[in-house]
Image (cartoon, rainbow, N blue to C red; front, side, top):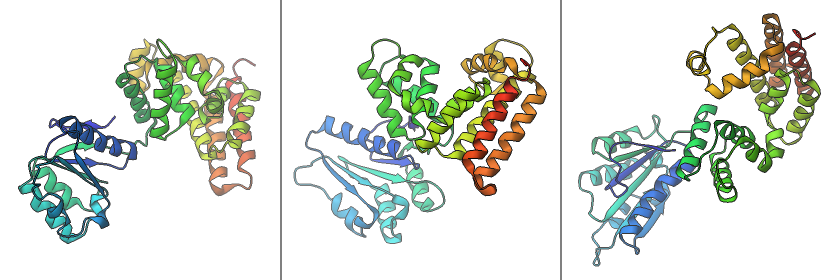
Length: 328
């Protein structure tokens, strides 16, 4: 979820929402609007693109009203405002109008940094809305969604949902809300699987899981389904690499409790248990062979080969064989 600083009053004179995650930016706006309308149901909301806020427009929007109505002025992509308009906004920071809340959505980064710095210097409330590019961030987001919705969900359920849905936060939030609305009690992996079985089975992580478990036929079936449903080949090689690396890390780690190993290897405890089950047929040589096969497939799907699908099939078979080397 969006992280907020100590100034956590949605009705602060100025709020800046910083980042490029659309869902979090929209939620930052919704929070301010909801608070304003809770204070005054007749609150006037103006939602503006940069080209709609010409020099002088902000002064018009924030001029005192005869009826002293509450107003929320939202400016999207504030980093794209013209230089003259930026001067108007900076001047407003020094003398904000009572009963008016200004919300600036800023992408962060170098463009328009002067405006962002000025807002911070003026003590604006800030909401961080970073793009969630790491799987761990999306997993934390899903956990937060279930907490906010007042429902318990197991770690495995959260991971399965992320694997099934992918990187779109809106879809993840919608899926979590749907599960909470439809299911009573704790949400577990089986429940998520029932709801999202088609997508879960088509995910790159399912291909990887079946391959590192030595289940070649199932891994190939999942691979073909993934490709047929539009999963990018590079996502599959990435998942295969993660799966094999996890095997290698755990096999070379010192023994200990899952919690201790989790801290050492940077994995959640539940994943330690899963990888332990997957690594039973692996040998150090098998890990090396599998990683080489995945690297070759990765080069193939990134333009080094003529047939990405064939490159993936070869990698999946090689990984599955390596997973069974010790059992043979």
